[in-house]
Image 1 (tube, helix red, strand yellow):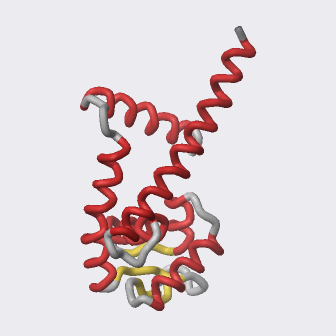
Image 2 (cartoon, rainbow, N blue to C red):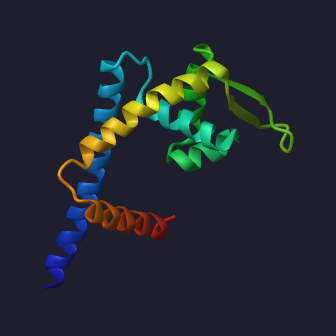
Length: 146
């Protein structure tokens, strides 16, 4: 019985990883098909900025589950597109605060519809109560490993 429980835990971890990978790939494909020159990870970063007005790079790395160097590269790329700008952090002179530009905000708002479409694809065939229950479980799991 203990071995079966262990296998279920491993399979759950693999399923969560596979789901994340496939969802990320689907969102990037949907964005590309809709004519957006942005990846799923870049959209998540823009969305985080839209929800928080401005963020430092460490906060973005923690929220997006990425290392700081990956976030730095992503921000540099988004800066070349004029979708974000960096300003010296008021509290930490060694750090930068990242903010959305007007064109970045417009892109994020327009691309958010593709994000919702992708989530609708994910949840196809689920009843509302199933979606709510699954979301609750996933949130609790995420809180357990923060």
